[in-house]
Image 1 (spheres, helix red, strand yellow):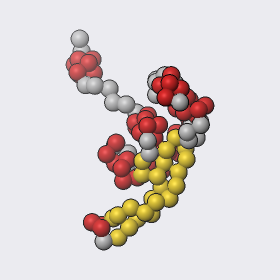
Image 2 (cartoon, one colour):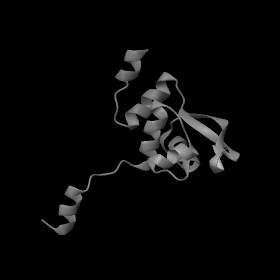
Image 3 (tube, rainbow, N blue to C red):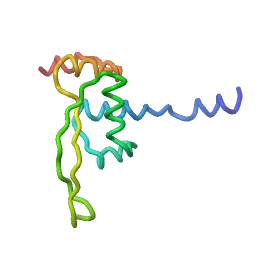
Image 4 (cartoon, one colour):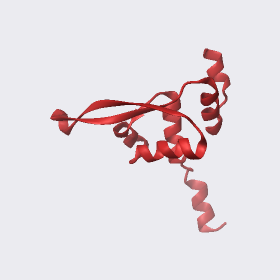
Length: 106
């Protein structure tokens, strides 16, 4: 066994950034500051990629959040996967999830 193959067996494979963010938006919503904790430092580009390259519809709205320790506010977008059944099923299939969980709660 080579050193590279031994290393790859020990190191867990990270989920792609667009999939991490899609998972967050499928289960809830996120803004650019919250996305930092998921390893995304440019959320608007990731959202654009998900829509453009993976054909998932994303809804958003503007919100104001506290900034600079509460001394100011910043206007940011909050994003989530559009909740229509077909779009949600497509998003879940991209994540390798069953759409059964969506229909079981409806």
